[in-house]
Amino acid sequence: MPIERHQTLVTVEAVRQWRSKGTEFFCRYDLVEFNANGAPVYNCVYLVGEEEKILVPEKARSDGTIQERKLTFFPGLFNLHRKFGDGTQLLVQDDYTLFTVRKIGGAIEVVSQGLDRTGIEGTE
Figure: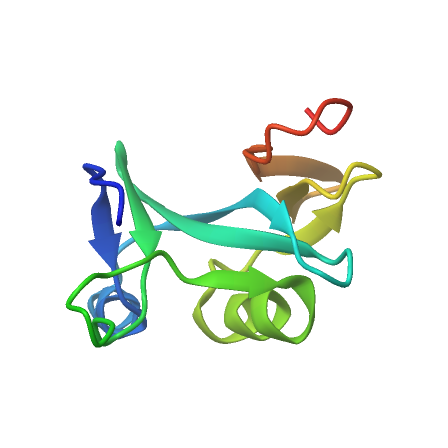
């Protein structure tokens, strides 16, 4: 049975609209699990103003529920960030958490720091 959560949801189509309207947004990638192959899996959270919006698929599942879109780093998250990201660069930490950074002048600025939501000791 699905767990009810209160989150603001967003689809790639909405991100396309933000871009066409010039809406400023940033991306954060939260580490949520490791798949059967040991690869890290992430959720994409779009930050628009003070609001966090979690990326979901365009269509609901056959049972009518909507789940967050889970992405492995490559090719999923990498391609999503290239096509629908905020123009920042990705920086992978040793614990597999992700930062987004941008270069301003000669300095590197951290734009967002992904959260570790795995609950696994030693990765937080």
